[in-house]
Image 1 (cartoon, rainbow, N blue to C red):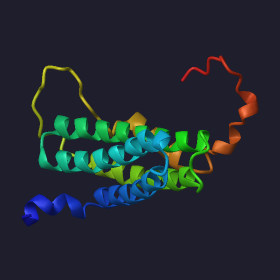
Image 2: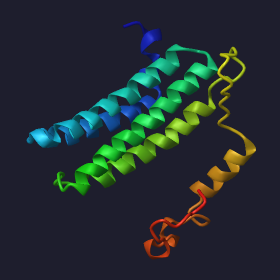
Image 3: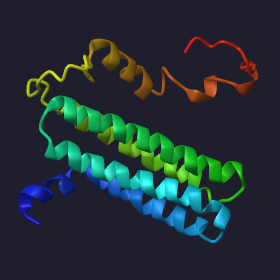
Length: 172
């Protein structure tokens, strides 16, 4: 392949996606011992592949809205992959602590992902008549991210399961 076409492989976000794929592959291989788990294995590895493919697609298409469309699909694939990994634990199918390993990898990826999409050129776009405009760097979003990444201000342990009652409207 030409260097120009292979350039996306050098991006930190793609390298993190490769790490996710390697872990997904190991998880999927461990699940292939049983016919009942083959669907989950396919979900895990398939979504890991989508993440890589959509990064390449976003880098290949310069228009801001197309790049952001790929970014949304990457986020969905990461969530779907995590759901499948969590299902393996819920059903008692994984012998290792794959859930925490994958959470760590996805979180590392997310940090690179946010930086990557912030670098998209918003001025290079054309209207697509769908009225969807992505803007990943609003002041509100930046303020929320400061809170999310500040462990002194946001601690997940502050949220006890005892405080939550099923059916309670938590105004998300």
